[in-house]
Image 1 (cartoon, helix red, strand yellow):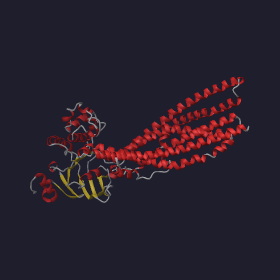
Image 2: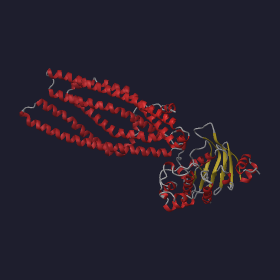
Image 3: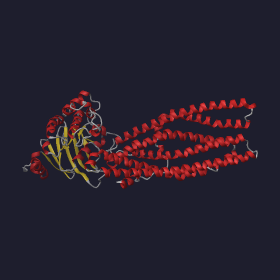
Image 4: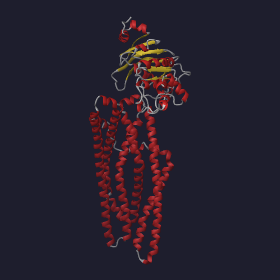
Length: 596
């Protein structure tokens, strides 16, 4: 397992620039006013800091004699006022920068989640949901850290560095000119190690996402893990994944440490060298002690700012990697989207479904035909059953009807309109689905039923629940319909979950109904109870039913038989039993009777 996750973590080449950060700029635009306030506060705080060395110079050059006592008092009173400016400016800057970081990251998360909801199921067949969730949470958290604390530190030190350099030039052009010689030595580690830190940051984030994806996948199927006695193997596999993530993070940290040490050494060494040279200038009478002190303080401010910038540079690189991973998701185009000029579906809806010479391959299995040259039409109000062996293409029909995928050839239409020409959301509002594997969300029983129609009233929800026989078990739960069912409905049985799915479909009240083995998880008693509800549900609706148990569909208006992705026969139960060998064999196996 670990090798697979290592390869997946390395499958995308890491970027070499900070360009991904530019993708975040639009998220800041709505908050220009706060950005201006933060900038003004930053400038006030920086100016207050840069004024202090001027006072130090005056005090040193004018001495500390009794004759100058009042002058000293004035200087320190002015310095106290400067300190107040510094404190207020820093507080305002901190608040607004932190607020911007939190707000922008919340907007990024909202935008990313909304985009993920638009991506077709084909995307999630190729991406592990755990990695996607990691980008939505871990990567956005990294961006929040960068645009709150890291951005605050970086902005303050950039302004301080620029201001200190200007004041160094004003104080002593000669010493400032000598300090310029150290700049290439400071920039060199940033260039050499910056790219390596960026690459390692991306690798660390990818390996962390891989371990999170593995954990989510196994925990979601923990009963399967335990049933196969694979706890130890799974624990070892996860440990290997986390070790890989730790190794990448440790290597990145070492590169950052080396870069920081090199920059601090060069910057501090340059200050020591300037101090030595300046001291000789004072001894020889070319400089006053006050000027040297003023220049030295500015040089220390510049070196300190540069050192802190080198430390946050690694965080900026890490953030660029996070922004790159988020940008990849935002750049992902939905395989299924509304056309530029959609065609309105007819009103009122009729419930007609038609396939015309449809051929389809799943994106993950391009060489295998899921459906081949399939054509049929379902009239409004007709009940059509779909039968055939596993892998015959039955579920694929439902996915194409809902336009989760588009066929490579042919067309699927609803009410005479090609689904590719309609808005997917509008088209899906006409379809209710009861899947074979019911998805139950964390929340209450009533929340899960109302998921099919959030605006439904309490009375409508309870009526749908009674029609689907949900009331028979819900009213016995500790809190009735308000009982929490746990993640994925773990506290409910398979039959109870399926009854909730049927209640959802009843509540939606759509003209087209898709039933994918709707009673497969029910025992005989429950199935008998549900069958009456399904009969009422299918009345006056176009209904397509996938069924393995032929007894549940033998009274359908028409039965279509699929095999190997092809529609090989259709007709009534009696007609197919007499004329189609595959259906006759299925009927014989299930009814234990010879074919007619």
